[in-house]
Image (cartoon, rainbow, N blue to C red):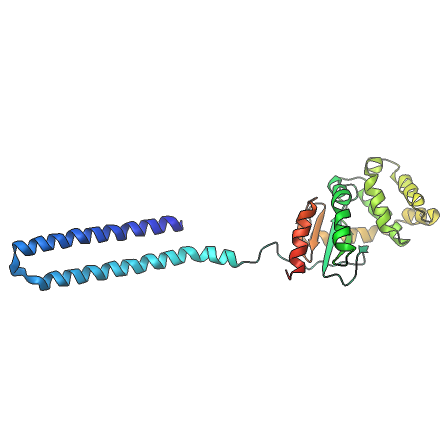
Length: 262
């Protein structure tokens, strides 16, 4: 649009200048034929033509400036998604509490994309940023309704968290996703995982049977809805949303931007 406006008005200016040239040539010829009309009339007409060209040039410059304004305003807008104030609640967290970057993850243990993140991206994220004190990762539950064992799995992970072993259990659940995701006896598998990791089996089974973390899991889900989460995994990096099983480079880019001051 900007180019079209500039070309249109430039063409008009050129046309007016050419017309003026022919006009002046005509006047000059007319002056040779009819010298009695004198130079004063010729000078007056030249001055009038120069004034029109100047006014038209100013209009073209004004239109060009108006056409550039939206692009300049767009360039001045901050890059990246807007920030959302996301609570970490009292959910499992990994990393230094004073870390300059906090990532809040909303995840579903039965989600294959969440498993992909946990197995492919999370290890490098932990090594490069969490273990070095730059990032703190908070895990919040977002069990999708069409995953039959998503909510029970989230509750099982909370039971492991009760014994201080959430992250080990987190890794075991994602590694064994194919074993329990469609199972009608998933609770037995969950208990087996807990015992395999050295947790108190009786305490874990009692916790799972009581469903005392049902409301906690639902609260996470409700908070996620309030923050605009519609699928898993969804991450908020210092409040900026990143959706899906993104590669490490996507996290790295946003984290480095935050470490440099956003």
